[in-house]
Image (cartoon, rainbow, N blue to C red; front, side, top):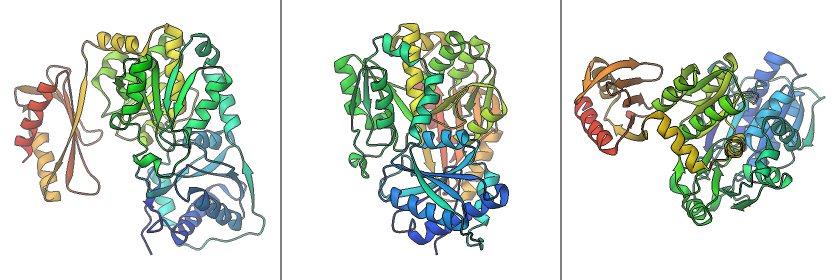
Length: 460
C-alpha cells in the first residue's frame, strides 16, 4: 500500500493512482482516531470538497468512515471553498476535512485536516495523524451523516467584517476570473446581493480548470489583464479551492501579494483603526517592514508557509497576516488564508479612500521609497552534501559581490540583508531533492541579475 504523508496542507496524490478508495479510507480512519482520542465522539465533524474530479465521491466515502466510527457528520451539499469550511470549523466548534489539492494540477486530489481553531494543522497534529495510519479504530453504531450548506453563515460573518454597502455606494466595478474554482459562486453571490457590478468569467466548475493550473499567478491571468486594461476596472482571481487571491489594477498590471498586504495594512490601521501586529513570513518583502515602521506597527516574522502565519495570528493580536504567495487573513477572521476576504477588503480599501488600485499601489511604493522587485532562482545540485556545503559558504560570507552583509536571519534557511537596506537574499533548501530555492529582492532588475551571478559563483 502507498505511503500516506500529512503535512499542514494535507495529503495530496494522483487520483486513482495513490489517491484511491483504499488509501482515502486509511487516511480517514487515521484522522477519525486522532479526533476520537483527543476530543471524543461528541466532536462535530464537517466535510467539504472543491470542484476537482471525484472530490465529492471521496468526501462521501470519508463521511461514511466517520459515521462508522460513531461521529455525527455534516457533509457539504455542494462545492465549497476551503476558507468557508475553515470558518465553519471555528463557528461550529468542529473538526473539518477538506477534499482539495489547491492549485496543484488537475490530476491531483488531497485531504486537508482543519482543527477547530480554523487554521492549518500544526506539525504535532499531522504527526499524530500519520502515526495513526493502519491502527485499529473502534466502531460505533450511532454515527450519522447530514448534508449542509455552509455558505450562508460564512456570508453573515463576512457582512460583519466588511462594509459591503460602502463598496456598493462607491461605484466600484469589478472584473473577476474564477479560474473554474470554488470561490466564484460565493463571491459573485455577495456582489449580486449588494448590487456591486461584477463581470465574471470561468464561473463554471471544471475538474480540468480550462486546461490551466488553477493558480492565480500572473502567467495565467492574461485574459483578466486585458479585460481590466480595456474596461478600466479592477480585476481579481482565486485559486482552485479559494484560499489564494490575485489583484490586477485598472491598467491591467498585476499587483503582487506583498504590495496588497501593504495597501491593506494601511487601510485597516488608518481607516478602520485596527490595532495589533503585522505577521509576515521571512520571504515577505522588506517593503512591509518599512511600511509597518512608518505606521508604528510591530512586525512578527515567521518561517515560510501559512501554517506559521496562522499560528502566529493565534498567539498575537494581528491586524493582518499574509504571505508572498497570495494568502492573507485579517483581525476578526480565521487564522487561515482566505481569497474571498482578501478581495472584499481590497474593494473596501478602494471604497474608503476613493482611490483606484493604481493610485493605492503608487502610494505605497512612494511611501516605501522604491519599487521592490522580487525574483526566485532555483539551483539544482547533484547531492545533499553540496547543498549543505553551499549553505555553509553563505553562512561564512560577509559580502555578496560589492554588497556587505549587514545581518543574517535563520527563521527559515538563511536570509541575508545587504548594506543598501533594500536588498535581501533568502536561501532555503528543498525538502524533497538537492535543490536550493533562492529569493532575491531589490530595487532593480540589473542589481538582481548581478546578485544571481555572484551567489552562483559563491555556492558552486
